Every structure is written in structure tokens, then in C-alpha cells.
Image (cartoon, rainbow, N blue to C red; front, side, top):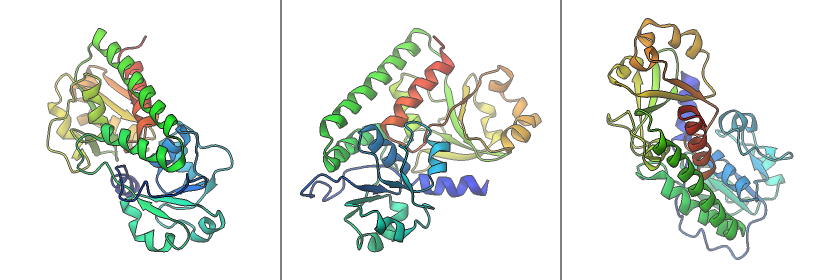
Length: 290
């Protein structure tokens, strides 16, 4: 549980939004370093992948697609990236998230550095991600590609929405499993919650949530989920199959008894447009197979 708590502590601060001075660079950035996976997936999708990203194995586990290109330099931990390695890569732009803002004074000695945020308390992360994609497009000289990514993602969501409209599923609970007893359930204000609404689905979780759009609850809190389907995403802790799914409480839950439990491949919970499109497609494939 502590591992996922630490991971979520990083993720809940990640995200996007327009930053003062973001358009003040005289030339497009060509050698970008980012310490955030949501930034990294977007840069890859724009055809301007970062030269360095921390914890590349973690990116593969939690983001998966789009993959980082071969040769992307592993910068170490997102808690304590290798500053000397960053310097050696000679970046012309470094992008941080608020969790890493303490590093900004050090990184500014290496290259221009931006700290960007979107997810916390924004209400509509998908719209914020669209604007952030435009900001990134300007920063790296990929404005046309940014608009194309926005249109392509909108089209993917529209396709999934049409599939759900033709075969409406029950309400959907989306949760990350922390351990054998605890989950993070995503409601209004989360990326998953925003996407459920845009896909024409009912979110099965209506309880109060944090500023980042999720509730940390015990499995017993899901007993009132009614006819909801339960959706979680890989990677899962070992406790999911050896602990949670073996407990009498879990097996008494309505969606378990009705066999409406779906485990999806990884989708970054605090990601951007690539994660949004991936989630929409995977969710439609799970709930209304073609």
C-alpha cells in the first residue's frame, strides 16, 4: 500500500494548464526533458519525444502506450533525478509538475524550466489537457500536430460514445487497487470521471472526492454500488488476487456476484490526451465488445 501511496502522491500533482511565460521562448525547444509521464506521453504523440524521462520502467508499467522511443535516457527517480545526467544531455527546456517544484531553482541553472499543473481541482481535466496540448505544441514547434492530436482524440471518444449509445452499460466504477483492503475510486473531477461523462456513461461513484477527483476507501464502501460494473487497471498489487479477491467481503459485492469486474491494461490515471483515447477504447472493448 505504501508503494501505491507514494506513486499516487506523485501522480496527483501531475497534469496541465497554461503557464505564464510558456510562449515566451524565441525558438521551438528541440531537446526537452520532462520529469512527468503525462508530459512525456504527449510529447511522444506529437512526434517530439523527450530526450530524458525518469523511471522508464515505471513509464512502461503505468503508461505502456505510447512507448518511449529507444534511446530515451533514464533520469533515475522522479523523487531525486540525476542532475548531472540532466546537465550532460544539454536540454533547452525542462518541464516539471508541482510535486517537483522544489527542484526548479536547481534545474533553472541547467536550462529554462517550466512547472505546469492541471489535475488538482480543475473539474474538467480533459478540456485542460486539450489546452495543455496546444501549449506543448507551441513550445516544441508542433502546433499542427497538437491540433491533429486533439481532433484524433475527440474522434476516438466519439467512436466509443457511439458504441456505448448502441448498447448502454450499467453505471461504471473506476478504481485503483491499493492493497487487500483499500481502493482509490475515481469520481467527478478526475480524468476517468470526466471521460465517463463525455462517453455518455454514469459514474457509479457519487460520494465526495478529493481535489484530485478520487476517494480513498475500504472495499466495504462499495457495497452500495448497486448494478454498477467495476473497472480497475493494471498494474495491480499482488494483494489484488492473493488478498482482495479472496475475501468474503469482496465476493459479496454486487458487481462481483454479477461477474461485472473488468481489469484493463495500463492507462495513466493522471495522463493527457493519449491516455484519454486509450481509456475510451479499452473501456468500450471491455463493456461492449464489437
